[in-house]
Amino acid sequence: MSLLTAILLASAAGGLLSVLLATLALKLKAEWVPVMVSYAIGALLGAAFLEILPHALDHAGSFQAVSGTVLAGIFGFFILEKLVLWRHCHTEHCEAHGADAPAHDHGRSGMMITVGDTVHNFVDGIMIAAAFLVDVKLGVVTAFAIAAHEVPQELGDFLILLHSGYSKGKALLLNLLSSAAMMLGALLGYFLLAPLQEFLPYMLALAASGMIYVAVADLIPGLHKRAELGHTAQQALLIGLGVLTVWLASGLAHEWMGGHGHGHVH
Image (tube, rainbow, N blue to C red):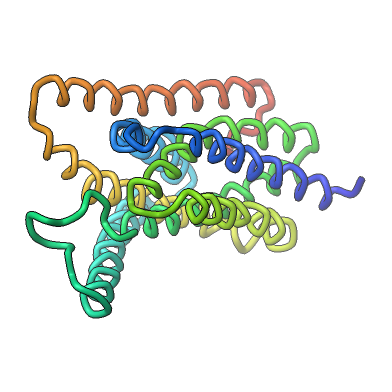
């Protein structure tokens, strides 16, 4: 088996895991989706602050450049959401504002989380290629580690797509397309690793900004519609559980990679 084939197979396996998770999420009862959005918020914020941004800061030449990229990304996602909202309000009766607004947001948060996740998967593909180019064994371990920390985030992303108004079939298709970016990243990483290496921290920062924006601007305000103490406690518990899952998965991934001496890859 050639090195390129091994890289592509490892990347495809990571994407397949995401699809399997999405398939499991399809079995969720509709009334559970809004409840699980709290868990998704925790998974998104945990992935952004505990996993993605630390990696970006580790490899960046300037902390200020990374934080500036996050700021620019949040602003960019704000503009993107406004454009989607403007388009919706000009193509059909606008229900985005007002008391009668539906529970979902006409796909805005779902679309933005897909953009952010696609960038993240693309970077993960490059990292898998980088690890295989150092050592095949390290490449396999890295692919497993990436798959492990993707688990809570991918499940969270799928729940957000459902909450955002997408059908289960369309959410599954978007999940598949986003996962395919990992293979594209791996392919480009194999051929163009040296020039891409310089941009990795800023691509990671951009992916993190999308997750932070969707969690804070789109999803958390929806939780405030239920102000009862019981609901608040449930939401806080599920957000904490989402963060904890990412933290545990991240710790497990680092343990798998321990002792290889190549922590700079992921």
